[in-house]
Length: 101
Image 1 (tube, rainbow, N blue to C red):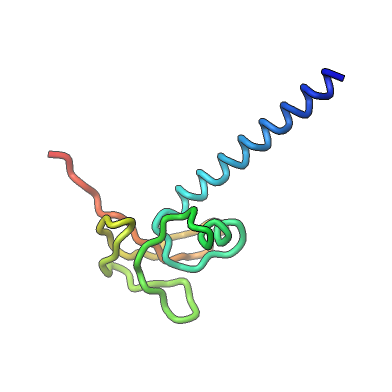
Image 2 (spheres, one colour):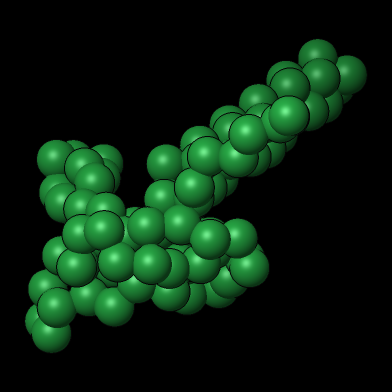
């Protein structure tokens, strides 16, 4: 009986770890996204797990005005069309580089 409990426990720990890693990776890949996403990234976006930018996208599309000013969580940036997962292009607000002088 204890071998079954150990196997189930290891399975649960592995499943939770992989789920958390997937969410962290998607948050990194889609940080500042302005386009409406589909699938799991879209689900995370609709539920507030992804930081979104303030770029405006073209009507019915995922492209935005490249180089326009935008903000992510109050930080300034510029709009850019970047490659998303699966080769799709999405509009994203890319934060300006900060210099530490």
